[in-house]
Length: 165
Image 1 (cartoon, rainbow, N blue to C red):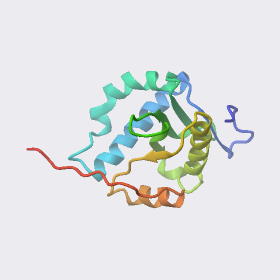
Image 2: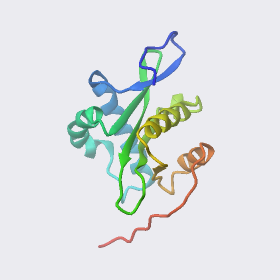
Image 3: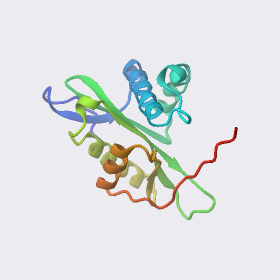
Image 4: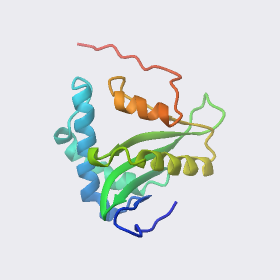
């Protein structure tokens, strides 16, 4: 993965997140929470509700060696982020990669930033010996569903929930 700054202001690069990115990443994490909250407010908390937790877990996540926390930089600004993790299961023969979150600011979508993130996560997971990548996507997230299918992901299971009152 390139860990360099863009050569020109319009170029988009991906790199591993740094501790100095925290203020921007906190805002993007809150925006991600707000997006999911709009899709399913009964399940997800909004950014304001998660703010304290985000500030607590984010520094640890950036430094965790079993995770890959990437940012996209355009015009000197962080415009998106993606997270990936190495997972193990006693039921599976090999470890696998899990994509936690991919988020790009609305004004920077349709610029292949998600594709850049997936390529970087794929290469990282491959080096770590993973046999596959997986992710979860909210069924109501039609933009996400379309993007993931376009990137070669396919549905293999469906998570089902029953509300307990």
